[in-house]
Amino acid sequence: MTGLLPGYKKCFFCGPATGGLALELQYADGSVFCEFTAHEKFQGYDGVIHGGIVTGILDEVMWWTLFMETKMITATWKIEVEFRRPISCGKTYRASGQFLRSARKTYCLSGLIEDTSGHLCAQAKGFFLKTKGFTSEDIIKHLDFRGVPPEIRSFFLPPQT
Figure 1: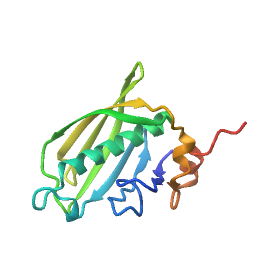
Figure 2 (figure 1 turned 60 degrees about the vertical axis):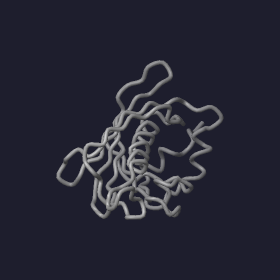
Figure 3 (figure 1 turned 90 degrees about the horizontal axis):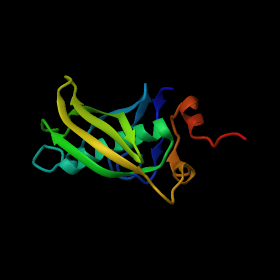
Figure 4 (figure 1 turned 45 degrees about the vertical axis):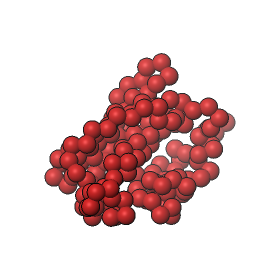
């Protein structure tokens, strides 16, 4: 299964109309990834994307990777980010998430942001816990499926009984 994922309508990072980043997340081979070009309104220092935005992008690709692999609703418990190179406004980058392992009720993922030359700009390790009080159906009703291919769309349908 590969292709564009739906955006969560209310999400700053993947929501298509929130005034945020509107990341177009893709899924393939057990990983979620996207290319992005951040506008200067997301800068910290002059011309450099704010570290909180970078961390949020990494969190987003890791969360969606975990969801696509487990279909569980989780929350970030802990995230560690290493900033290797500045991520500049107006330049294009690629972010990706990868499932590493699970132990007890904790899920560990990694996230990377690379420039167009493949240089590592930021990397993260995220730890996620299953949430209580939310189901996948609670999330799915807020997704925007425009442009999502049928194979991906069917992943979000409730199981047939």
